[in-house]
Image 1 (cartoon, rainbow, N blue to C red):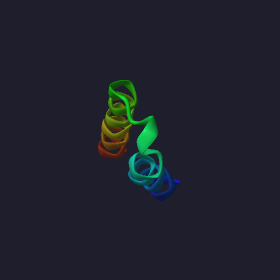
Image 2 (image 1 turned 120 degrees about the horizontal axis):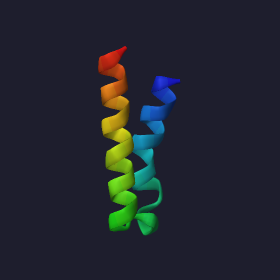
Image 3 (image 1 turned 90 degrees about the vertical axis):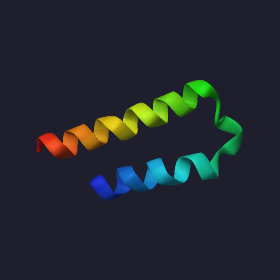
Image 4 (image 1 turned 180 degrees about the horizontal axis):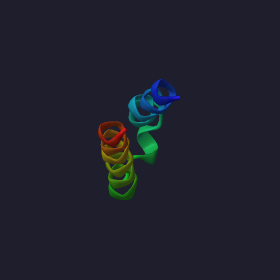
Length: 42
């Protein structure tokens, strides 16, 4: 599951460049940081 999540996070910016707005970029960054903190806690 973790691999799938990271794969989606890595592919999303390149697969949907037209969706990259400041809001989407902030959401991706937030999800990325959230997954890192979750991995560190567990």
